[in-house]
Image 1: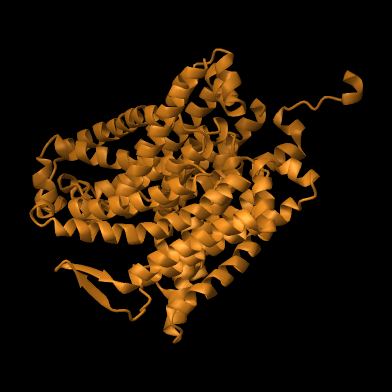
Image 2: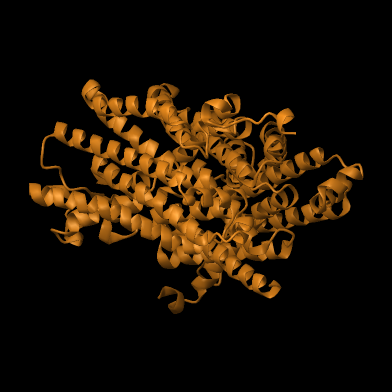
Length: 294
Length: 344
């Protein structure tokens, strides 16, 4: 095994996994927000991510540096999220769970296909023109990946501070606790929901813009990002930000390792396999819980 | 639905089904696909409509059935590893008797194996409710396709080809047309019977309130497993037939088409009206006909249109066509609307 023979490869895999895992965690945090506050399972999550990536990539082809594309992607995706809330999500929010799931699934198909029609099915990367450094002899670290990692951290921190300190953040948390009581207290829950969904779309857009710089994007990659987000949120729970971060980074590392050990064609199967494992694990946990109660 | 009305529908469909391949010889395969679609929608509705368990991964059994059928068709008479490495049909010829024996056993086994797969998987996923179930099954279907694509023994990504039909092309399409038609009819009749029994009531009870159903003494896990196995049995058979129609089985596009047939079956059922017997049939016929007629005129926009159709259907027209008709004309469906003034 090359991993045992050259331990330094582990560092490479670990670092790459952490860098990409940070973006997974960011997208998953958005899902946790929407799921926890609105009880909407957004299956278009991954497609929001890819859409953000295409915004940054497209601006890159127009001569705007993709790092400047990041704030633009955030703003555009925020507006897009608001539009989607008003046209679709508002109407499914009080229906049964599967309705929102299926509506967002339809939305996922539409976004993926529109991106495909607009930009073609090729795999794309936004060129950021940063240097690639070598550490420990053979380990290569692209500077853009480090930068993206730091930006992920800053964005996550910004969202956390926003949720803690700002008026809207307080309203969102109040609505998550008890929508009815929040309404009684004079909070416009419809607006809160709209804002939460748009915030999620903006977070996804940011994650996507970063992914377009450090990895590859393609119109149909969305579904695997959705599944990743579900894996992370299901494993960590909603209100658990440290858990989401850990699960996101862990997923990135695990995927990288399985891609290296088993071969790249197993990468998607690994994500899905992990999803099933997490679901089964949850089930066993709940079964235990049930026994304690009864 | 009263008996008379039902018979009025059954008879023309039966006549159409038998006469269609001779009336429209050029469209035999399209109509055969239509029956497969009807079967898909009906089987999805067992879980999604009648039991309230919305599976996004029922297409898994389609692929399982398809592969099982080929393996039995080939495996009885030849070594599969040799067969796949020689890329199928040309170097291996089967006699008439061998072909038909293989086909019959393959079709039956595809249903059985798919049903067993459902029972085994059910043990894993039936603890999941609502969205978790939908996502878990979606994940399963995607994973199955990916894993099949890496399995050398069954031809990996390049797939495996089905034994060559020993007769002429016309006989072949006629044979598979009637097999698919028969499978759809069999599914319909079975479900019509199943929904009338206690089983149907129990399954509906699970949909309405699973905890209460369990409290009433319904062994919910057993019912769910059986329901999914029934669904899987027929989907598996349709997979065997469809595999034989296409001729070559490729893991991602043909055997586990999660993003095409896997979504179609949900869309068709929702369009026709879930939770009804005729809804899925109506939805499938409408959807497939519309799709066949308009698909090529959309110039790449057809998938966008499909997504929009799903969204509109879910958001604005959730009850589907049959549900809407039932609301509009309840007396036609044998539902007695009680006069509130009189009962008071």
